[in-house]
Length: 426
Image (tube, rainbow, N blue to C red):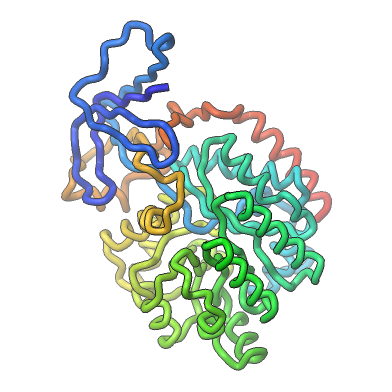
């Protein structure tokens, strides 16, 4: 299928230059786009395997990416309250998320991945970096997630959340799943939960595995203050120093999520490293773990959702409004963080985020939009509701707000069925 977009107002995601043009979209991973003067005159598009999208009065730009997701939380919306009302972050983990992940099975994982992919696609997100946990249903879990994402048309970079919190059997199965997934040639990280649930032996094995497969570590860092307190008590060092000593920070592919409770020495270590930090502001607010000034961490900051939802435009706005109080964040800086996932993926040569990943926005603004004022529209105007069509790796997956690659109702019916099954177990 040859895909053309006519009458487009194309916005270059890097320099925000506006261009009135027609576009030829190449299919395949890391494909290109070509600006053309006119669309070929083809009488029978079906026989000639041609699809033409009219983007008149619409905006076309690069699609979006999520730097830190948890698809395993997709079935949590509306779930029963925990048996005890959590009084702090550790209790939120114990009574909510660790209770949920222990009760997942393979069908629930598949449903979680399918509906997450669906909502990512609807919101213009075509690449997801996910951090998965299902300690009593580990075997083949990463392969299930990848298959579901590919069925919808979303590219991914996956990992399994290794931890000592559920015992040796779960830990070892997680190591096996991670290695099997990477050995098969899939894009992935070696995932770790957080310092306070990872003993030295597991940390060493994780770093060794990352070196073996030329990848990085994806880990939660100082999300709650307890992570630092336990690290100081057990290892007589702070979290970032422990991770630096392990060799984890030597990998340019490493992602440190949250990074709330760090001191100036730790911030300087990160600033002078090549690792990346995933900011998840709504989750931090929801869990009441605090906020931080990410401007002290250097420029390798990207945005995630932490499984709260699949809407990166919403995440950017939340990070901007909170950032007004914590760091006086600017329009250009929040847009840079929103787009930094593309730089992370490109610098580390991951597939699936080429120029042929596009979003078409039906944004009927009451005021003029141009290169000079685009960032004001980005913060205060453009919403996920304006996503009309989405192209992933050159393939049209959303057209006029409808998913083309999979039956939406089948996904939602399956996810509801699996959610009820999960909630009964909770």
